[in-house]
Amino acid sequence: MSGIPVFILSGFLGSGKTTLLLRLLDRAKRKNLRAAVLMNELGRMDIDGHLISEHMPGLSLEKLLDGCICCDKKSEVASSMELLLQNNPDVVFVELTGVANPEEVADCLAEPQLMDRTKLKMVITVIDAEYVLDYNSIFAADRELVRTLRRQIEVADLLLVNKCDLVSKHHLMKVGSSIRKYNSAAPMHFTVQNDIDLQALLHGIEPAVTGPAAPKVTFKALKTVHSAPHNHDDHQQHKNHERSHSRLQTVTLPCPADRSTDPKRIDLFLKKSEDRILRAKGYFHLQPNTDTHLMQYAGKKANWQPAAYFGQPYLVVIGIDMDTEKLKDNWLRLWEQ
Image 1 (cartoon, rainbow, N blue to C red):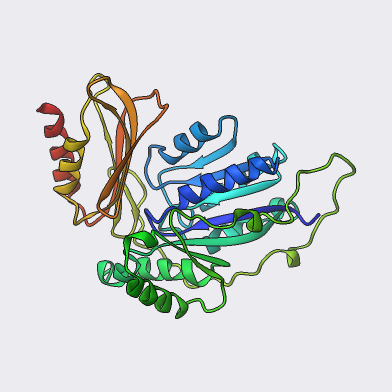
Image 2 (spheres, helix red, strand yellow):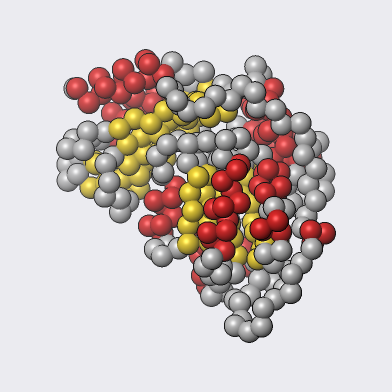
């Protein structure tokens, strides 16, 4: 045994990492593997964690909220991993926020308390085929963010170009050529909803067998990743406002607990700022029967699905250069109508 295998799931906001994670968890369960998950989200409220827990009750899950791992949360990664390892998982999946550098987690696995118990199996980067070619222009004024997104591609062991059903074959050819400029070695798959051969990804990982303690492995067994300069001087601590990565911002908007709404009103709210909103997700009570639904907004499209969430409804908005005060005012007006 060479340590518990760790998969790092990377990729920009809305690319489909959580969909991939759900597929991996299903496949791991079919193999009778005990899986553990470390999730990182930009906002102060947890969305994907609820979705994962609902999908697989009893899962060993740790969450790092309100910041990206590569900055103010990096110091918490090792302790969170230690908590997960207490449950003796067969495999660990780490889903990063869309603006995190996967190298930073790889570095954390080399900490003394983890290096003889874990092994970086693979960095999988999910790429949004519809929008990846626009990132350089969208984030032209934020070179640090562009470098991070590029680094997600450069260090990947596996590249998944997702949402291929939303673009033309000609567009996909341009996407593939662009990606190969930064990573010419990693296998690249063009997918819809990250539908790939997961059995091959988990090949060689088997349920642990009770017996003598496994021998320790050395640092040389870990994958070596060379970090690019990663200076986030622009990051601010989350005090009087929410700011996660340079020009990227996250805003948590609570919903009145005793009020329900309909999707059209939420869509209208998002469209008012859609040129600045990159991602949004939240739980809502929908009319007429007030059932709870999860809304996920990416690529200027909203997807709704029933959810077994019983807490107070809320919305998390992630965007760039947003007028947060105007956003909050529009949100309040929505519920006054």
